[in-house]
Length: 295
Image (cartoon, rainbow, N blue to C red; front, top):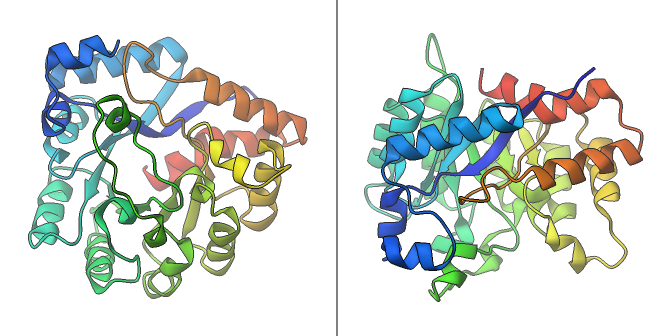
């Protein structure tokens, strides 16, 4: 069986995203990155990139609160190639109204970054987000997922621009989602980067809650915090605890000219081959599980 690919984790760095960080075209170009001419141009660029690498579909993430419109435009123009995710800060007074508008525009996953915005995942305001996600399923309404970034958080563009990153990883414990995951079993939860250093906690949560999924994206450099741990062992533990239906491939691709980060795919496939994971299970990880969640 050939390995088909869907990517659950691509950041859509739109013109408004860069503007939100106070960066103009000259600043971004000096970093060696491309500043997109428009949302439409960036969407077309990503379609070409997916075609180039044989990727069927990907999740596009609006990576600042307030940038959901940019992703919604790209999804509307290329609905067969993109699934829209958007960042939400639930501590804002307008958070639920903003999330409703984004979902009405066709976006499918609400992204929470508690270490960035300073709240616990068991906060009542997070429960309001889950209640909204649960309410959106029924009839012809498509299922809404919640993406919750846990563990270590590092934003490369902020470092390159010399911006402060006052993140507090005390807020990023996957276990804080236990009660809310049980309360809203119909809402799929995606934990990126295997918990980004909190693998044990992410596995505990997923073992207790059948709606929790693990995203495999990024370099997974957090592995260095556990001496002797390897990517092969991470995959084996995840498959042993979670099973093959709740592990979802992602790259954490973001900027151009690098584009889609095929090296991540190569490393992860090599790790799965090394531990003898079957072609059938690899198909689920690299494509099928994403397709089922975002059909």
